[in-house]
Image: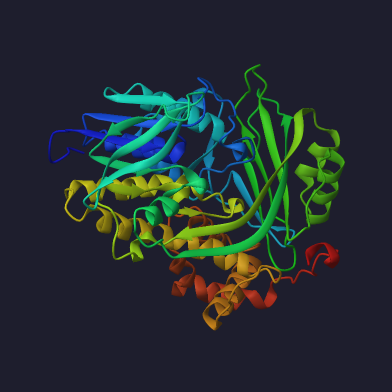
Length: 463
């Protein structure tokens, strides 16, 4: 797509994770120079780093996210496949489970890809680094934005190891905060005399235990992934994903089993096998019991989802924006984070195309529309679990009751299963599940759908 004007000036991106890389890719269309400021030392290959402890755990790139990344970085899918990532139809080569039952599968004509978060980020980082006019400064701490007359005009930062007074000031025509959940924008706004953004939180107290296992890379498995959703009867999510080979050439599986409100899995393969059996996932149970373990069993804890409503602020500094987890951070079991960041990058492109006048308001409204659907899906699903705290007005209760019926029918109705999968991958709005053709099948066939007895739980651990 041709940009309306030639690039000019400098933009700064705070944070060089996936959201920051996507923002930098868009900003380069409008600016001569884009500078990414990152607190970590960044590896050249697909390797973990201190600032993203969750990156080694299972990550699913939703189909909509793959579409956007392919649009912004042509050849993205093929490059990951060349590294050993597995492509496949999201309807037939990925299984979805709920209530210890597996949805019926059939091709729906939409491609997904099973690849590690580390490989995805490494590829995007390489592509962005190679762009002319792109500069990446690592191992620096951004101290504060430079602000004057209602406008951000750059940032002050300090290199790691420098003395307390050794700061640098870097001027810019636009600054975008992509620093993740630890974003300091709320504190900076308050220090500059602006009101903080209203914030929404849903406490889930989630922890998931993960491990990598050897996979036979010579044969393509019948399933590239299995996604187990949590439900009131079985409130224990799980995931199994094929991964590209590691640095030694070993193809891998990554498995994760989770629980809420203290119902957490111990850091042993035996505990993973026990949990997998309890939720009916034979594949994870078999790997945990008999598979070749690669590396340690690891855990990630996620306390709460959060959303900062910058679009509701009446005053906000000009030439300053927020993108990615710094704006909205979701329960990771739904795999929405990378895809939402990609769609926010498209919203940034559209907002910039209309010029700098009113940019903040225009972008935040567009980004809020991007976040609305995945936020409602994630929060609604979390509030279906009785031990997740939060208001449950009548519309939420009715929708959750209907979604439970959708999940029961999807076990034996391919059309309903396909509709659920398309919504899950953010290809369609949730309203698709309420389309007359889908609703008729759900209401008619739910009468014969088998009910599932709730999984016995230790309620003492879930207080």
